[in-house]
Length: 144
Image 1: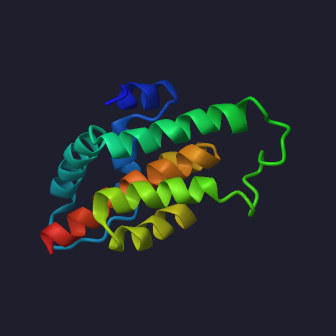
Image 2: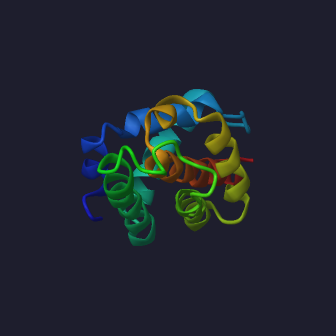
Image 3: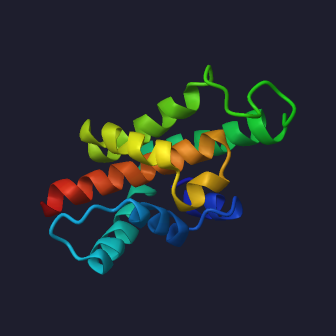
């Protein structure tokens, strides 16, 4: 939906990199690591087809372009503490996919910023962290 996967790829965010970041903080819950990675790859692809998830991801892409890249010298260039909309987008994506528990999973990924997350700007790092958190939260609840 909204060509969200190709839009993310244009920003250097490939599904494989998302899965790799997810697996850096993976906690085994009765599913082998390799199986979990395959499951997450598929779940992330399905999540990107959800109109709610894809519209929130699109919002993060557009906000990052407009408020971060076009204004590198602005007050949000360093992701200041008063910028909350990026966190809200990430938590919303996580909760749409994985429910309330995913909010706590989002916090883990947001704080540690594994893999591709540390390379992204303030909106995309939280949006992708939310995508990961929602999917990993579902993985844990469905495999445990």
